[in-house]
Image 1: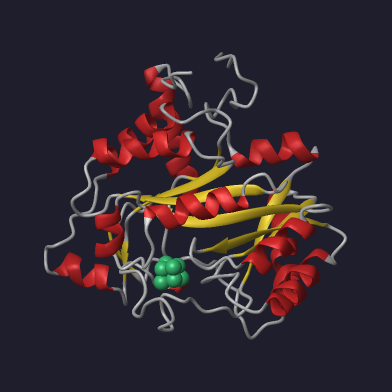
Image 2: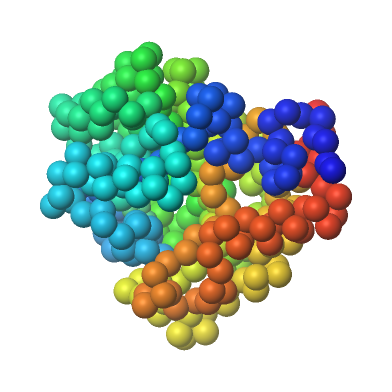
Length: 314
Ligand code: SF4
């Protein structure tokens, strides 16, 4: 039986999983419940860019049943009922996921966030956004909420390479991300970074440098997934033209294990896989469920006799 020296590393999973982190922090099982609050994205509506990121089809990001036309209270109650029944969750974090969830007036944001927090079983909110869409007022609002509730700010970086960011039409730079992390740090809320591995022209060695970047920033958790093409995106067209070659499952699992070895144990892992509904998934088609990817990566770490942070140089 593996006994980690760092208590943040789960003995079976060999990583600091976010579920494990939440249980340590709040003492019970907590689930994230997604809501669609009807936001759009400045990289789609023309204010920062148009067309969006080349892989973006928000249908693939969201679980069934979240729709902006349904009041967030109804979305919350069906999501909470599902997680209570399936996982026995006792408390919930409401995840404002779809598009850019700080892209609105501070009055609108305040109304939405506080409505989510009104439910007695909701301990906090998680807010997904872009690094170039966080106004000073939105930051102050999140800071104020974090005085009494859990708050996680989820910032999309995707790649630390500005050439890749430009090629995928992200509409922001690495520096935008770093500056926003620094503005958001020290405010008593968590910061989560979103990353993708497998961009055209990116080597494993290039991607692994991201672990060092994360280690040097005040990041509390991260989400990583493979680049995958879904219907209705420019990336799907590139795949069909032969200009995007997806990673193999073996390449992905092996490089993610390398990445985790280089990542400090303090950074909790929220996600290591992205899946899309079968009817819109173009490539790669690994056919794995989320928990099967977790096990593939855990097995890789176990086979190596390794764990998150094993190769971190203090
Ligand atoms: S920032 Fe997010 S929502 Fe906006 S285009 Fe890119 S992936 Fe889509």
